[in-house]
Image (cartoon, rainbow, N blue to C red; front, side, top):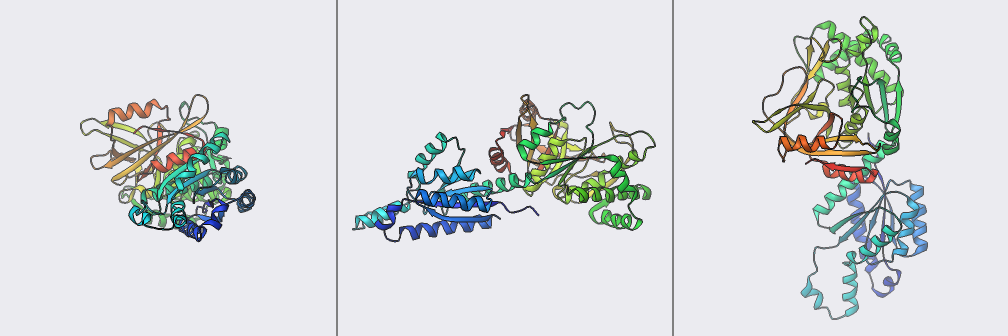
Length: 474
């Protein structure tokens, strides 16, 4: 289970208003209660500091948020407030901040408002609706203090604003979860794939993830220790979770099941939440026997939220994990070929897929050879279900910094390659030629991760929370 993101919520106001306008503070507090309730429906753990109206209250709220170890601040601009009562909270909390400028309603009933005889009552109602008044002042203070902030503008019945806030909460949840991820690195890169090589220090600095460098000899020891009973149970799991082709030889199924059990033990031993792997070994080595029987087990792990990327594609397993944390899967893929008549691009890979993205059951099929790699064994055949998808690549640039490369597309019906690989057809709004040009111009590795649904907006916000540039290919 992904831990809930902890959100520090606070409203702001001007202390002198409370004695001037009866009931104003209480009404504003009621609106903040609505906001807190919405945040909880988004899966957030809310630490609500109430309405801050003085510097002393600001320092108390900051201490409250620090002790609560919040991951994100949500500043509800309740009414006009002095920036001096806001800045100390944000400075001391030292976490990203989202500013809400949400009026109680989309518009005032002007005729009813202007019919009110008492000007004090009128002013109090106006102050209930003057959220936008403080936003430039707060923005100026944050900019001059070097504090990044994000602004959501709308009203309490504005579902577009709530969707935007939900994306910020989801992005914060992923950013928080990524800081707690242990990434296993098993084996080595596929030699010569210069695009795949990663800077692990930069990955840790950006995402906060820990990398566990694993030994094949340890996996081999776990492999030897697998019992026949465990193999039998794993075979039952294969037949439950895969459409096992009749051509699969019993011995190949047993071999894949034993390796799958060893991988499970490795993941449990190190508490891994994702895994990048590749190895070749030499003929007749027990390591060769293991590495040519990993695909079924790695697919099961990916379906259990431990995404696995072949060819030791560390950048891509990070992308797969982020999509998995968003609940949209995250399958390992590369460009296969273009169909210019249908204006689609086929993407797939011979490695693990994410079963939740699949159209129907994931097939387990025999391969007489792994193209470009030694050995033979079982592989999977699957296509991503039809509908909207999001492509994500984590790009390492010339200066060493990371960027997100995104595209939204449609998985569409049509012919695919029945070669014991995952592969699907994708149509892009800018057309296949323009997409290939735009995607390639960003300099990604040749792998990417594919999730079902449209989550580019959330990934864009995640990039901003992490300080990572976001490039939209389309």
